[in-house]
Each structure stands twice: as structure tokens, then as C-alpha cells.
Picture 1: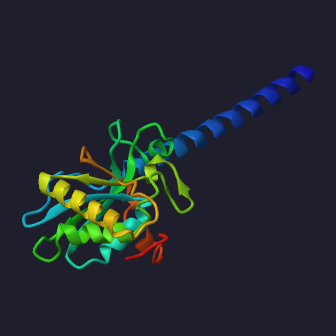
Picture 2: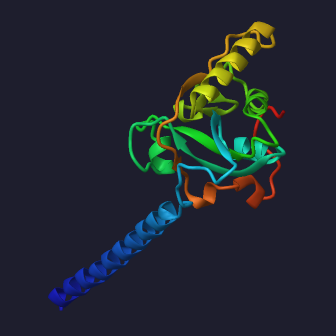
Picture 3: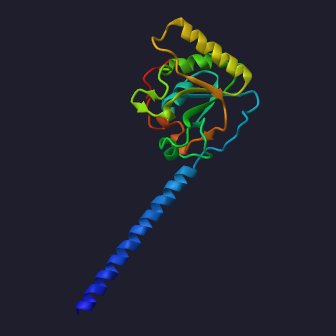
Length: 207
């Protein structure tokens, strides 16, 4: 009778363990599937369009700011400036990949110029804070311009220097300018996040 009692308990424990493992496996599959849902990647803009890459804190608010600009034809949030391939949001938040939350802006240069997009960038955040925007702290929230050409680099430098000399900010501008490497689109649930959730903005400054 006692042997039967212990065998029943062992059987019940085994059933519970199997159930827990199944739940864990399902959760992992769901998480991996969510992470795999990314926009198709292309490093070339459509004909007649150009790309610009800006990092200015949480990419939800940055994206929404640029989506309001006439001449911006598409936006994609993602990760730039890091060391590892195909990072997930969890990877970037671990501070081990070096990526910044970035918005890739597709625009029509016949309607809006790159210098004007730079103005929107400067006005959408506090560029005197390198690794922080409001309550968001970490290198993934750093202020950065990832330029895609010599023309973009020259325009970004001129814009930064003019703003610095204007005395608009009481502290030095901390924004990093660096050549663009591979841009990795973020998971689908991050794309147009504020619009999907009926929110206007999550940024501390607006243009």
C-alpha cells in the first residue's frame, strides 16, 4: 500500500513536470516567433527616395515625430551602431550589443530636405544627453546620427556646429555622428507602436 502511494506521487509529479516543460516550450516558441516577425530588410530606398538614420531615445516617439513630417514616405524602427548581427529587443536592452534604438526615415528629397530632417531631429529630443532621454537610461537611448553619405555627414556636422554656436543649449551637444553600418529592423510589434496604441507621443520634446 505504501509503495503504491509513493509510485502514485511520483507519477503525479512526473505529469506536472511534463506539463511545465510543455508550457515553457510553448512560451519560448511564441517568443521566438514574435522576435522573428520583422519587416523585410532592404538597404536600398525605392527610386526617388532616400534614407536617413536617427537615434534620439525611445524609438517609438522618434518614429511618430518623423511620421508627421511632410515628405517622409515611410519609417522603420530598428537597431544601429552595434557589434552583433540580427539583435533582438532583449539583446539590445542587455547593453551587450552596442546598438542604439534607431529610426530609419525614408523621404522624398523633392519634398523635404535632409537638413530639414536634421532640424526635426534636434528639436525632438535633448541632444546634450548622450545615453539618456527623460526616464530612459542606457546606451541604446543615445543621441546619434548615422550618416549614409558624405553629403549627409557634411550636413549633419554643419547643423550640429550651428546649433552649438547658437547658444540654444546651456550644455555641449553630446550627439554622436558616425557612418551607418547595418540597420536591423526591430520586431513587428515595435513598428508604429504609438499609432497602433492610439498614443500621440512619448517624447519629452516635440518640434
